[in-house]
Every structure is written in structure tokens, then in C-alpha cells.
Image 1 (cartoon, helix red, strand yellow):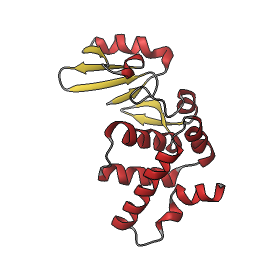
Image 2 (tube, rainbow, N blue to C red):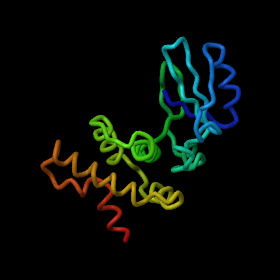
Image 3 (tube, rainbow, N blue to C red):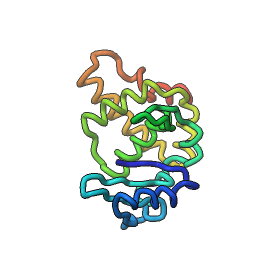
Image 4 (cartoon, one colour):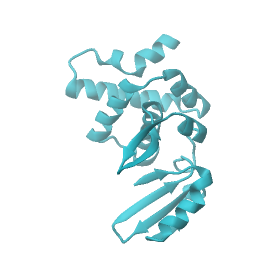
Length: 168
């Protein structure tokens, strides 16, 4: 389970979770921003104070914390990423960590893409962290696959490709 905590709460979160398990520093570059906590050999928590993949940033921490929504999870109200942030996080994860697209990813990314509230801020993050081209390439793959599997409509107009073309 990936959990993002505010940087001010990172050390306290590690100490709290260590009461239930044992933490390890991530062995690669993410070690600066992530601890892995294993609880009873049943639960692995990747505790993050910042988002990065293989040491590269794809979205700013400030952007994540200022573009959220409140959700109730297990009777606790907590901030969760809004669709703008969640789309970027999932696209970066597919491109930089897993490097493959599951059917669940396809459906979830598609669903997020039609719920994006502000493409301008999404594009600003892509430009800021210089991953516009990989993002758009994956968006095109998602659009084409989703269209072939579930479509029948002209799918391009429903995802960001058309929005991006309008901006050129």
C-alpha cells in the first residue's frame, strides 16, 4: 500500500507504524523520500513524504497537497488526490515503475481522464517536470485500447489528445 504523508508528519508516522512492524529504507534512490514498513509479514506499506520514481520527480508535492479532495476511509476523513493529481500519479507509475499497462490501469486511467477538472494545471506539471511526450504517448495508447475494447465511438475527443491539440 502506498501512503503519502505530509513531510512534517513523516518521522512521526514512521515511529507510529514501527510499533506494529519494522521499517526499512528503500534500497534505491527513493530511500530519501520513502520507508518500507512491513507489518506481521502481511502488510507492506510504502510510506512516502514525496512522490518520485527511480529518483525522478513527475509531480510537485505542493501540487499534490493543494489539489485534493476529502474522503472517508474506515470512518476517518482524510485528503486523497483529486482526479487531476491521481491521473498524473498513475500515468507516472505506469511509465516509470511498472512499465506495462494492466486492464485495470486502462479502465482506471480512462475514468480519471474524463474526470479531470483542470487540464491547464495538469499540463503545467507535465511541462515543469518535462514528461509531456511520454504522457501523451501513453494517453494515445490508452485512448486507442479503450476505444477498441469498449468504444465504437470516436474516442479521441474524450481524452486529452484533443484537448492538447486545441492548445497548439
